[in-house]
Image: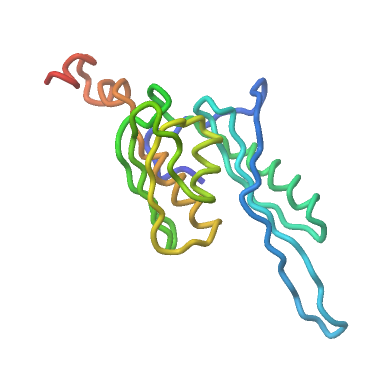
Length: 174
C-alpha cells in the first residue's frame, strides 16, 4: 500500500494505545429484483496521538460491523509520521484522485485548522498546531488518502541528514 514512499516506517499495532476516529459512514444501495438491499461502508482513522496513524475501510449490512471491520483494517496499515514540537517538520502537498490537501506547520497555540476528514487524521497522528487547506473533491475517502499522501512525504531533519550523509548541524547551517 505504501510502496511508493521512500521513508515509510510501518508499525505493528501490538503494545500501542490506539484511539479510533470515525471519519464517515455511507449508506449504499444495491437494487435487486427483490427490491433494494442496503449496506454501509465506514472509513476510520486510528492513531496513538504520538506519530503513529493508519486508515481503514469496512463494509457490512450493519453500521457497527462496518465500523469494527474498518478499525481492524486501519490497524493493519499503521505508519509513523515525523512530528516536531506538536506540528509538522515542513509544508507539504498531497493528492489522491480529485482531492488535494495542503498542510503547513504552525506556531504553538494555533490549534488544528482543518476541516472534517483532514482534522480526524491530524488529531489521530497527534499534531496540535497546523494549518491546512483541502481543495478539489470533498469525498472523505479521497481526502483521507490525500492527507496520508502529504504526511508520508514528510521528512524530519534527522532523516534528511541521514539521507545526505551529513551531520544535523550541516542541514540547518549548511
